[in-house]
Amino acid sequence: MQDLLVFGRTGQVARELARLAPEARFLDRDAADLTRPDDCAAALRAARPRLVINAAAYTAVDRAETAARTASLVNSLAPAAMARAAADLNVPFLHVSTDYVFDGSGDTPRAEHAATNPLGVYGATKLEGEQGVIGAGGQAAILRTSWVFSAHGSNFVKTMLRLGAERDEVQVVDDQIGGPTPAADIAAALLAMGRAMRDDPERRGIYHFAGAPDASWADFATEIFAQAGIACHVRRIATADYPTPAQRPSNSRLDCAAIARDFGIARPDWRKGLANVLARLEQTT
Ligand SMILES: NC(=O)C1=CN([C@@H]2O[C@H](COP(=O)(O)OP(=O)(O)OC[C@H]3O[C@@H](n4cnc5c(N)ncnc54)[C@H](OP(=O)(O)O)[C@@H]3O)[C@@H](O)[C@H]2O)C=CC1
Ligand SMILES: Cc1cn([C@H]2C[C@H](O)[C@@H](COP(=O)(O)OP(=O)(O)O[C@H]3O[C@@H](C)C(=O)[C@@H](O)[C@H]3O)O2)c(=O)[nH]c1=O
Ligand SMILES: [Mg+2]
Image (cartoon, rainbow, N blue to C red; front, side):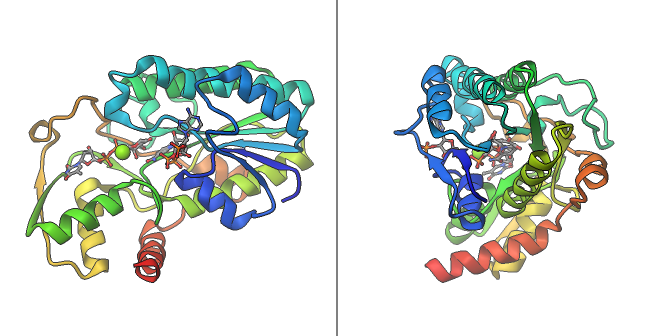
């Protein structure tokens, strides 16, 4: 895609965007540091893009609990500043957000308009980012996704492959349910949305997008070991038996009907995405 500007270069989603749209411009931390929101706005204005995607974020959920100031700059103030600059230039702005804006109560999938109530600093700063992006008043869309994995960066698949090689058993929570989502499918969805937004200035708003079928982290771990041929037993435990600094939502199910209706984008089967990621990891090791 021509004249596409992406904030982020090294992250999971950014790397998959680079595979699908190598001609785009990618700004890494040196080119645009999100702890400096004004610099990000200036970089956006200087690039004169026709479409902007923000794929950078502070994603260390537990560390965010004691780094609220940095998380707020990166996840809230920088995206808001980018969205205002994009609105001034009259170019569409796409932003990525998370299931962690919800508190995870209940056991049914949440739609876009469902009440938010983040449980931790990461989710709270991502929610403020959403509000800043929408509040900028331009043509903006937010893709809320969940449980992202890919061959790059740090994610649950790579953690399980590492632990599975070291141990006979891992203990994994079985009472948090959500949709694991391949970063490659997120990148494809963002590019499709971006094209549609450039063609139709009315297209904007919040959309949910997650892999199917919904699963627990223990289900996810079990499938990772099965596909990778690793003999490691998954002991299913309760969240209460896996204490972490930040609380995670129990119910991360996202209702993805709106993106299917408005953009024709269906939930991808994460088990196929997992096979692709394992094949790519196999090639590189
Ligand atoms: N990972 C997940 O499970 C989920 C992620 N999301 C959202 O999806 C989006 C993409 O996430 P994902 O690809 O997983 O992210 P990663 O954690 O893989 O990468 C984060 C990216 O943000 C960059 N970044 C962090 N801080 C700064 C900074 N101060 N200045 C510039 N760049 C910075 C990192 O750069 P560097 O390499 O220099 O640190 C890196 O490129 C984010 O908005 C995230 O909130 C939503 C749901 C789930
Ligand atoms: C490593 C490990 C984790 N767990 C649990 C902890 C947690 O509840 C769950 C997943 O662990 P993670 O550390 O990968 O989870 P986390 O980093 O919280 O993942 C989240 O990242 C942010 C950026 C998002 O936006 C979310 O959608 C989600 O993907 O599994 C175990 O039960 N056993 C283990 O051995
Ligand atoms: Mg993590």
